Amino acid sequence: MDITKVLIYVYVLFFVGAGLNHFLNPQFYDAIVPSFIPFPRAVHQFTGILEIIIPLLLLTKYRKEAALAMIVLLVLLYGANLYVWINNLPYGRNYWSNQQHFIRFLLQVLYIYITYVIYLYDK
Image (cartoon, rainbow, N blue to C red; front, top):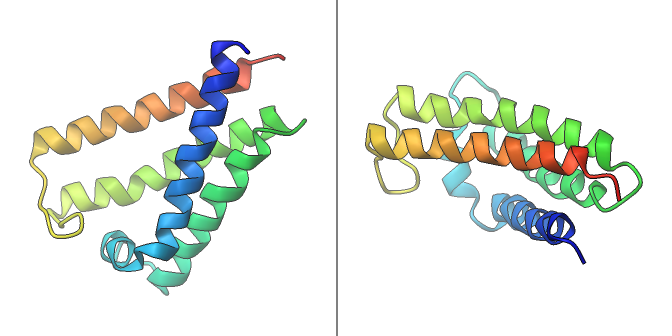
């Protein structure tokens, strides 16, 4: 098994876990949904469903389409993180420094890059 295939499985497990966390720890996500979005719990639970389904599609013949959808999702979801940063809201019970927020931004860029690598994977 090559390294990209292993990366895909780790990536899928990570995002399926993140998606499940929307249901296991809903209060955390309630707090970071921007206030102008109605029905915050429903919105973040829908996001959790997408974080489960789209990565699982990376294991199918629809890998390229799923990777593109995941890139779009990652870009859109960063909006909530940016909202937290700009409005100095807590993640859970903790407030983050600008440095921590910037590291979180770099992680999001890394997730997008990894998704692009998965998109390019041909086997």
